[in-house]
Image (cartoon, rainbow, N blue to C red; front, side, top):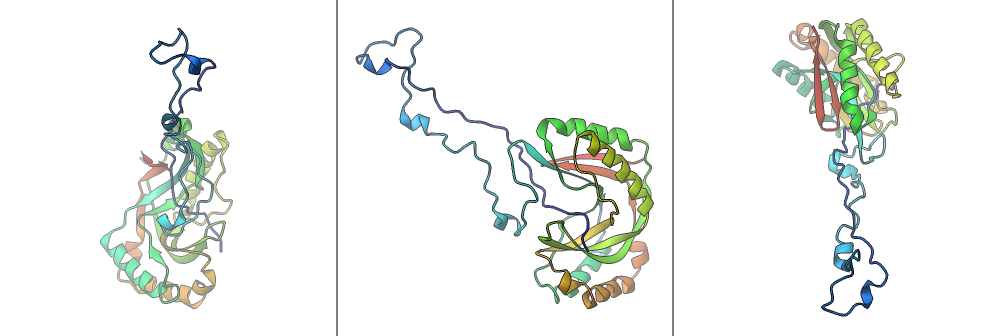
Length: 265
């Protein structure tokens, strides 16, 4: 089953540009040593200076080996910032204990699974913003969600997801109560996306907390017995009903390496 893509976030935070020296004007080479250049003439620039900054305007090499084999869902371009809107989830110690138990069992089916470093529930796809649009975009988000109150939700249903390109697989906990509140938030986020001519969220979203991920499409190994066994671990975990109930207290926007928080009332 395919669900909202959860991409690796990257940024193009530097706008620096380097320029080579000016070309030599005709006639400058004909003057004898010791003579001053004529007014308005420029001295020739040494080759060592002309080639000093060669290649500095190229974007960084996208080496997937540097970030766990993940592949960008869109190419890196200077000035483009990967942007994502979500509700953060603060994991308690007991939640991490449950996650360890789930991951240990899931790795018997897919050994390459690794734990997520942070947890959230997506309210948008990952989109691309130009740097000068970041602050207007965030302000539009703040205006749209200013009247929303915090709400309680439960995420206790194990589900397997892939991103749209089927290049990554995720084990997630799907929201089973509070779904309507998330839909209301997405409706406002979508309106902002439309204002900036960006992609809106999915028509029938499955709100969830991703727990672990791996490179490639691992649904065949994980759906079926593995999925049932993981759900059994959740259901039998001590106080899981209370543990997997939480409050959505803020919306967060990550654009490149910048974070913007919007508290709910």
